Length: 340
Ligand code: IPM
Ligand code: MN
Image (cartoon, rainbow, N blue to C red; front, side, top):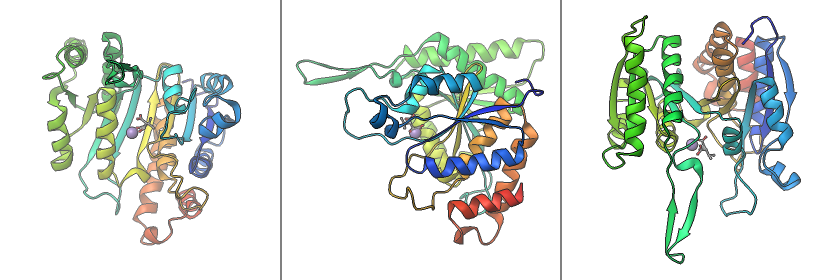
């Protein structure tokens, strides 16, 4: 982004606790980036009930126009509702947000162990998420298609490479299931390898260590030895599952941030859902949303020092001895605002 012009942000609170945690994140972002320009848009189940679509065209246009969005959460019905498609899946697809960046790190007092520091780079547009399911065999068989393309595998690998160069990270783990799915996951693995082999031979000759793991082995390692991971690259559903497991080491979903990232447009989003059971009570943890805002600062606006400032404020807040007793959205937000 051009550092001279003010960064612009499209804010989409969405459903449930999204309405509570997103204003908290916006308060922190505007405190650290006073010239941040904000527009608001809507998406989610509430929007669907009102307008018949979960993501209105104006919302997509506003995110594109700003180049950055911050999304809260979406409620989804567990039954199939005609015409409804999850707002977050729609935005990922329509805006071609092909990389989902999910960092997991140690936070004081809430992380179960001190030595975890990884980034999961999840392919965000294909795999089983192409949403092609159908009935066959007169309703006796349900079929889901899993698409892997060379193009999507290449661009996610390039994103991972760029991120590793930027963040000074040296080890990549490709997670796949090519022993059972040699075509689809073989294509994914080989394409990622190709991109990194090319980088190794390029002029800057960075020393990347590239290893591969079958997803079941990766799941065991995620439980038994999470500190051994640096950057993980994987397909859509494996990344979905592994990133929730990994979030445990970062202090749980209340702290898990993510960035859906495409070319020229990105949408930050806490990994947690709309939490209808606690919505409206003022007790949702805003930290995941606040840290998602920090990811925009770091990766999209190139404001590394601002991202660090927010993360340090979160660290101080969590380290404060009163943290476990003041879990209200307002109190945590206030504490972080005091610390930035
Ligand atoms: C996530 C969520 C989404 C996903 C759901 C809400 C569709 O679990 O962002 O990880 O499966 O990608
Ligand atoms: Mn998920």
